Length: 366
Image 1 (cartoon, one colour):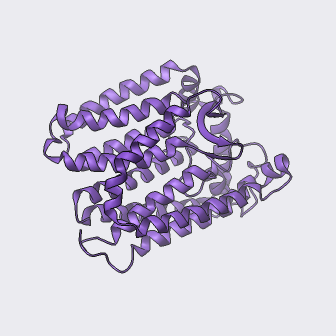
Image 2 (cartoon, rainbow, N blue to C red):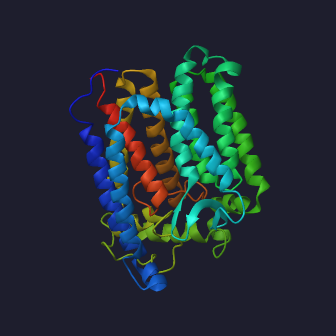
Image 3 (spheres, one colour):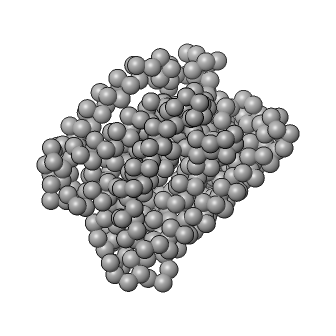
């Protein structure tokens, strides 16, 4: 690998810090009423978000300064550790049950979500595997099935929790990387059709997922049940108009909209900051994706290129799904908005992934 440049991509850094700043402000605004009602402290979630943002930025800067060869060397051990954690979290009495999913390990409020770290482990391992087997990538049996089998195994364990949102992001990221590695389009299209059939089967296998699809198509059919979240989300976004109602002036956050500081924070942002605020966030994500793809294109080797493509794909898929959900374009999946939604594991992991982008940007060819 070539000698690193003196500094990482400054536009990535600027976009991240702007998103984090907006995120901390919106977590406070969206959660103040709920946390005051539940904990007697309107800053309860905001203080934790600032802590995890600071921790995540520290980890991001550490990762950005490591030798890139370490990511290659540690990709397999990290994958095995994450697979082990995904098995452990399923053990009753060990994994913590929250929101109907057994997805957490830890004690009380101090916990981690192994599925979040699996997303990063999959990116690193698939980058190594696809680099070592680049000459076979156009073979369906030898080039395509092995990486899909690895990602599919992680997806299966995540679905046992169950967590369809995280599993969808993981598989989507894997497909982006396989495409970037040079897989044949006809193979990918065939797998896409199989994926649609499998996704339909997963939906039909769980009554609550069927209810979410039904609510997505017509939320007012069950306004107090399956359609409640989407209706309240639209009630939040609608009055925002061009300029918004102003910071702290949201009405839906007052115990009307569930999860206003996590999955549906973009709804509160649209209500308080309007089209301009929501558009600014989308522009910042667009800048991040643009610079991430630039890192992937100008990377000095295939491994670095695939890591950058994987990280960029993971962020854009997750952000796209979240924004699609809160605006009624997609069914409710229970997935957070990167850098803005409250959540320790997700925020820390995503910032570490950005640290990979910053690291690799220092070795860019141009």
